[in-house]
Structures are given as C-alpha cells and as structure tokens.
Length: 314
Ligand SMILES: C[S@@+](CC[C@H](N)C(=O)[O-])C[C@H]1O[C@@H](n2cnc3c(N)ncnc32)[C@H](O)[C@@H]1O
Image (cartoon, rainbow, N blue to C red; front, side):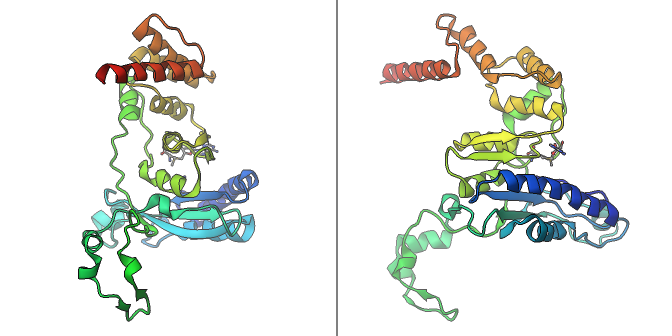
C-alpha cells in the first residue's frame, strides 16, 4: 500500500489514526503466522525542507499500539523515480532526489512464516567465478571479520541471499492493463507497484494456495502477481473505475474492445461481473463447436486443446 498524507503535522497525525484503524482489522483477520507488508513513500513537512517522520511513526504505532511485530524493515530503491520534490531538489538544489520507500514487514507473531530461499538474488560475476572453481579462487581461512570461510562457501545454492534493499525500477509497461485502459480511453492508475515488489514478498512469505489480501489494491498488481504465483487472492479498492480497469489484467489479448468497455461499465454500475463468462465467450467465438459452461470445463477444454497441439507437433 502506498499513500502519503498531505502536508502538516495535523494531517499526518490524522493519517496515522486513519491507517491504524485498518491495521487493527488486518491483524484481526491475519493468520497467526501471517505477515502484513506496508509500503510508504517519504514526505516533507509543509513549506520547509524537513522530512516528515510519519512513516516511522506508523511503524512505532503499529508495533506499540496495534500489536504487530517488526519482522524486518525493507527499503525499496526505485532508480527510475523522477526528481522530487521539485522545490527542494530541482529548483533550489537543497536536497537529493527521494528515490527510496520504506517497506515495513510486520508479523502477527514474532515468527511469521518466511523462506528467503524462494527469493534468491542472482549471483555476482565474482561469485559465479568462485563457484566455477572454488579451490583456485579461495583459500579457506578465518577472515578478519571472524567468519570462517570454509569450503562450503563454494557451494552453488542457486543464488545469493537478498538484502533488505530492493532495487526495482518502476518502469514496467504493464502490457495488458495499459493496453486495456488506452483502448477504452480510461485513465490508468497513477501509483502502480512494479510487479516485482509484491512478487518478492508473496514468494517469501506465502505458500502456493495461501490467501493474499491487498486492502488498497488500486490497479490490483498484487492480485495479478498472487494469481501468477498460484496463491488465492482478495483485493479491496474504493474506486470503481480502478476496479473496472483492473479487470483487464485477467482478460486475454483476444478480448475485444466492446467486451472490455462492457466489463468496465458493468463494474462502474456496481454489477457483479464473472470474468470467466468473457473468457468463455471467446472460446465459443474461436471454436464454435464445443461449449464449456463452467470454469472447470473451460480449463479442461484448454488442456485438451493443448494436448492435441502437442500430438500434432510431435
Ligand atoms: C497507492 S494506491 C495502490 C496502488 C496499487 N499498489 C497498484 O499497484 O495499483 C492506493 C489505493 O488505495 C485506495 N483506497 C484509499 N482508501 C481506501 C479504502 N478505504 N478502501 C479501499 N481502498 C482505498 C485508493 O483509491 C488507491 O487506489
């Protein structure tokens, strides 16, 4: 979630109170070994080049009053972020550009479920060389730091343990989502996550089949990533327009302009929309013969068609 309070201490105090209400509800529904991850952008105080402490106050409030435990503080560095705030950075050149968000990882207990080996970072070139020929590269010895670098150091674990500084540019094109917005001439969400950000935490903190909830879903990047990772998901969003456009993430390239418009309009009118109906419609338009009517039948039909494709190419 990312939302920055307006300027001013009063606004910030109100914002923290407002956010804490949600935090209580999140904690209530979370499993005992579940996690709550909160992304907060930085802010300045009104009219002065002094940083707001609101994101740190949120952290302390959530731990001291709401009952969460800070599992780890993460920092999301977005190298593609434009210089801001304009007054302090671009015009007066008093401050560096603000390109790091704080991402607080809270546990409902002191022991939230986690497995960092699911999010290993690629090895550095130096490490790759070492793995190719550990004997030649490294003489096992006790280092000045006290770490005993033994032969085990040369073992290939598939990647290195990531740090809590996540470097993820927010320059993804979000293909289908943006295409859909353009096609029906609706505005795209202005503050979308890069998929890699929720992906990191979903992979590390949940297992396939677990439920991922985004309480401020926006364009529903989180839901799309959760689905791609085989997790079940729930997403809450205040704006019907954002929910309507988020549906494009789950359609197929073949869905037509008029279908997209219809889905968006129906969601805006507060109708319940079953997207599988639109996927089904496409199946019928393409094949014209078989008419699967339930999501399971659609999946089965797809599996069968891909099986027969394989036998043709074989
Ligand atoms: C920063 S955006 C989230 C963007 C999202 N991460 C994405 O990738 O698209 C925060 C969203 O929270 C929504 N929001 C604000 N208050 C809300 C509420 N009370 N319940 C649900 N959503 C809310 C806003 O409409 C906004 O779209």
